[in-house]
Image (tube, rainbow, N blue to C red; front, side):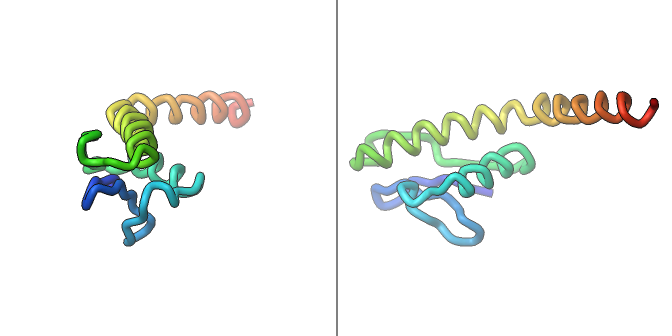
Length: 97
């Protein structure tokens, strides 16, 4: 599912079923996007192209968020394994004793 897109010279992100302009993004929206990047196999974004975004704020926000989300998505297997190991260590420490 696509979560970031560039359309009509503006950058958008998903908030539930709606597309919102990136300048309206909240920290909760960013957390939801990060969660989707980790959990969704088919997480997708439009490739960043500064020529399609004349607004400097849209360019900066989209470039930074898109880069971080795609890096997180590409490392999701390692990230999920790391989380499992954290809980495994805690489980072993507190439940075995």
